[in-house]
Image (cartoon, rainbow, N blue to C red; front, side):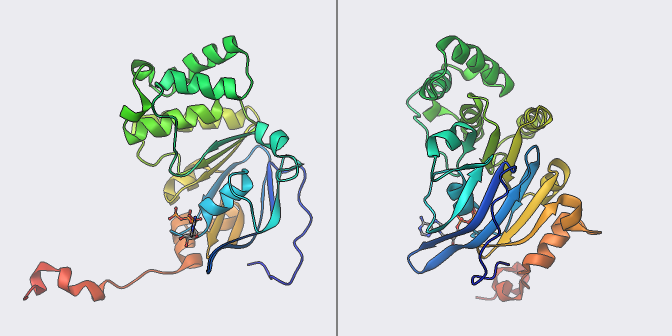
Length: 267
Ligand SMILES: Nc1ncnc2c1ncn2[C@@H]1O[C@H](COP(=O)(O)OP(=O)(O)OP(=O)(O)O)[C@@H](O)[C@H]1O
């Protein structure tokens, strides 16, 4: 946990993402309370934490979607809030609760994402075809995104985040609503991306997936980082899930819901 009085250490300019002293308050609610975090370049980094822990708020501030009240974020040594264009060119982001231009078809949306990034039209066409194939969306390339299922929408949003071949991918819950075969395909794509020198940051509630897939993990709760390091360092001799529960606490006895048990229903 960060001592609010202590100045944060200087950023790690070699890290893919280096967050220092990030704070965010919404009205009375302090969502993020002094997050310091380094995501090593070339890592597959999992961000885990209970509901409302501050994961999405931290990732939004780390990727230029939300301005912090205090603190700084560096992307591969570039100060995000001082040089947003330069830093954002290196980032691919799958935000939480994606809102897309859904009156476009899947193919049009990818083309639009590539052209917005200033890419050459031929390269965009080639990558659009590759990404549609990789995401198993070729058959729905000409369907409007508004008519996509939740999992298909997640996949086309992920493809949009990748079209400019960013050096760092930041993905908020990328596997939510995605079917197991597509999830396995996406995991393969992400592993290949990391093997090729990219860095992936994923937030997830699925501990087993993070333990299997990620090289590094940070546990965040109450707006603070409780533990961070390699997955083995953080989990020690336990499973990541057990370690998470130990760090975060919060297991509740369900006695309070005795009225929900049919055997005790009397009124
Ligand atoms: N725009 C907002 N206005 C007010 N409160 C907000 C806003 N965004 C987030 N919060 C609050 O900040 C806290 C952290 O939210 P955040 O979405 O970052 O959590 P999270 O760890 O991503 O949660 P989850 O796992 O449930 O997605 C929560 O208490 C949330 O209610």
